Length: 207
Image 1 (cartoon, rainbow, N blue to C red):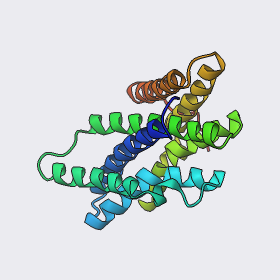
Image 2: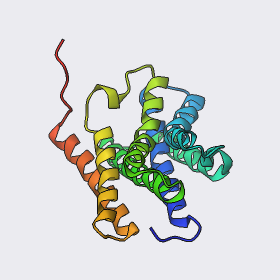
Image 3: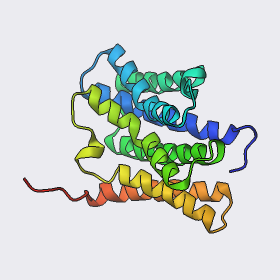
């Protein structure tokens, strides 16, 4: 991925932060939380995955806590949802698309950061990319006192892992870093959307 001093990676991170901030705020409204709860859930959903990733690779303090723009973007997403909901709300289909897009962006951004900046081995980079994508949603579900979606069923973490792996595979096949990242993001997004459309779930163990 060619960018000047991390500009492209930073832009992808911010866009993912905005999308997950919107998703987290929407979940807060669905759970009838007040304005403070909405802001907390938007912040947690948008930034928790990146914070967990940075702590695991030793990038401390985490970049999203050192740069005020991450928090500002997360709160901007929350404010957007708050004011739109007072008029007509955001359709559920749009939320699913935004969530899938945020998952894809965070998965490739987390993988790229682990690979390019911290020289993490590919397998661990895939795991870190997956954590970046699903960490915020997991914290969101915990705050809402429900079993995290990624642990119950649904092709969610699997989509993030496939996107991270697809990105690394693309690089191994000789694609440029940018094209490999696009490949991984598209793979993650499409797998997530098709799984929602077709109601795919991971196997479960019968009691």
